[in-house]
Length: 218
Image 1 (cartoon, rainbow, N blue to C red):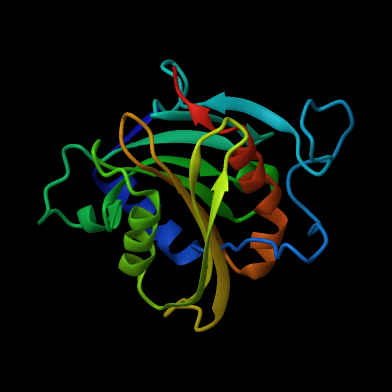
Image 2 (image 1 turned 135 degrees about the horizontal axis):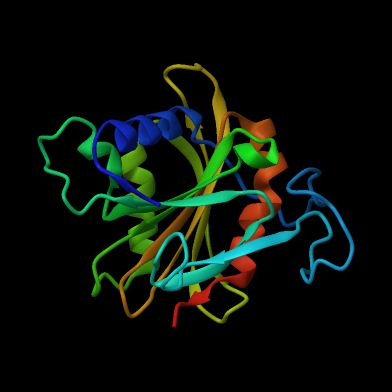
């Protein structure tokens, strides 16, 4: 189902802005607990997460320039911001820096409070690192940014960031993370947002699953 710009889209994005929060795992630390349901024989390398559906291709809940696996029980819904006018209430929440919201993947059915959100940009904006910096800068109230280069399991090179943000409503700092890749259809940013750092830790395996399985749609 495609979410149109309006009351529902604004409400969803506003909620996500409140809930936004995630962060990566230090290279020197061990795996964090939580994530989707554990189980054997899942076809993934991480026993803490089970693959559910693959999204991104035509006919999936979200048509994107990339495709990747989402964790079991997480649900994806397309966000259509193409008709949003700059002066329309809530329209600005559908854009962050150089990218626009395209897909929202909800963790609530899996028992977590948060989202994986996919943002897309214009073809020709080929610098994934620059796009990611613009995305984080546009969020505001952030600090302790740590950027690094990485390669997805599908062979796409990109940039990843871990940082902290401070919510004006919750008045506490929380960890967040996002990654960006370049594609022929334009840059793609995938961001994990949760209620707080504890929710981030629980949902991080789903974020890593997306990063590991991400490849160009086709």
